[in-house]
Length: 259
Ligand SMILES: NC(=O)c1ccc[n+]([C@@H]2O[C@H](COP(=O)([O-])OP(=O)(O)OC[C@H]3O[C@@H](n4cnc5c(N)ncnc54)[C@H](OP(=O)(O)O)[C@@H]3O)[C@@H](O)[C@H]2O)c1
Image (cartoon, rainbow, N blue to C red):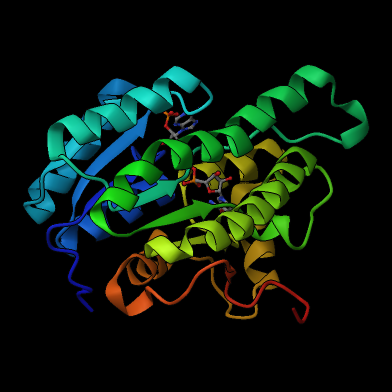
């Protein structure tokens, strides 16, 4: 389905690989011009070139560390300078380390808050004046299913993303009159480099880990980056414009509960 994003400009975080890359490629396929950010410049440029080669879309790579205030402001300024507008903001990046809550010191918590929470706050604050000026827009946060159904050892992510969901809900109320929708997507197990690293960290054979995760998912498979990207494209298009203030699992049925 092509959701007709012609003329729209998107900025997608953590888009040199994985979920962010999949989102950037889908938005480009659907007609958007896209700016992508990540820290490692060479990988980021390669990703931009590949998306352009595949889709013909204009893709602007902006090396940036989402934990830094200056990088967030600079990234938004570069998008405005190049494209003159921002219609779509997708907040996505890596994630804080794993660890039992009792073992985490203040430094670990501060870093997690900068990465998962303040990143979202700063990017939204920087893009909102531009979205309001052009009459609307979409803000999407990529969190995780663990923010709704916590997993032991993921405390830094769970707590900070739960804050993001509450922040996004509040923001959605404030910006709805300007035609801006704000939503959070909560992926389950998505096949990316990051998931492979998590397999490896457990010390267990990767195939055994893979099979264990698959066995947890009612749909019987891990998710793909396209499973996430398809929902992003819908939510930022006209067809999804009435959906706001939600947190949506994309998890093959992994979430056990009624909300
Ligand atoms: N994969 C899953 O199963 C899954 C499930 C639920 C939630 N999630 C969440 O979804 C997000 C993306 O996951 P993924 O699997 O796509 O990860 P990934 O394959 O490791 O990709 C992460 C991307 O973010 C960039 N990044 C990391 N730290 C950054 C920083 N400080 N500033 C800017 N960019 C940064 C990376 O590039 P650089 O390293 O060059 O910066 C890379 O482009 C993460 O927050 C993850 O926790 C993933």
